[in-house]
Image (tube, rainbow, N blue to C red; front, side):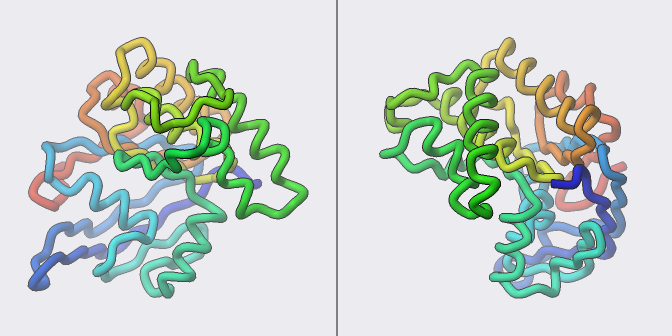
Length: 223
């Protein structure tokens, strides 16, 4: 898959109940291979922006253009297809299948890929799990700790070889050594492999490694 994606965002507004405006971002442009860190207090809108970039915000207006594909105006099914093809997501709600092993979960993108690509996806999933210190054996993720589950989610996101990586607090449940190892992988995905990375985080050490940072406060860009 081609590496990286160009983002052009204009006049993005996300609304919640009673049409209350919960996020307002006038403009954001990213080149392929850019690592963008989003900072701000809890509840400021970091996760909302990531969900919007993935086409998962229910009520939004404006334009989100990924490599010439505008996703705001698409149907929910169209957005889902775009996510499956182009986005690797590392979100706090892990959405793992409890009855499956780490490799079974991390290799799930293979189920939605063309047959010729499935073996490579599973191999990448196994490699990422090893790099993150997770046993890819038969043990079910139902018995995993929060940190172990987070690493499975990371492996799943990176196994699909997607050109766009969206990460919401990816180091939150990891000890410092594991967090730094994950940061190494995320930065390599952007700088060495050319992927576009957008990461919402409170982790100052992770933010310091980003190419750019954007601060969100009360649903608005603060700088």
